[in-house]
Length: 171
Image (cartoon, rainbow, N blue to C red; front, side, top):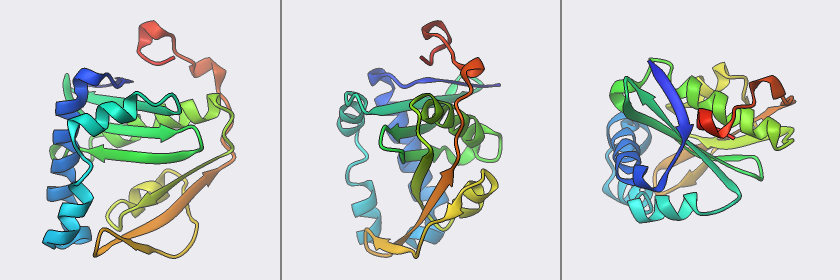
């Protein structure tokens, strides 16, 4: 069973473990095991940095639990950018990513955003395209060898019937 809730500071260790596992194990086609690329990509993936991201009012962050184990994380900035989106390698292709995305998209709609955008790895492009994202330009290099592909999804509509309360974990 997959559940999603707003991230908490005490999730930091588990979130960082998921993010780092996803990058090192699932994204090998993106970083090609290049030491410099990996080091730069992982540089700010620390529990302290995660807590810092949570403390910013313009960030909305959720975690997904698969069978009660933290298995994914997504962070949306109020400006419309998904800045963090990772699923544990052993939880991929079980609906965790779609569940995280639904929560982020719901918040984007509640914020009145008409467009959500992100930078995708080559590995994740198919996932985002299946969710309705479209390419928004040419790839750019980041962190050494890592190619990032800009994507955007337009015409979000608020669905207030989906609005959850604090008791549901999202508000």
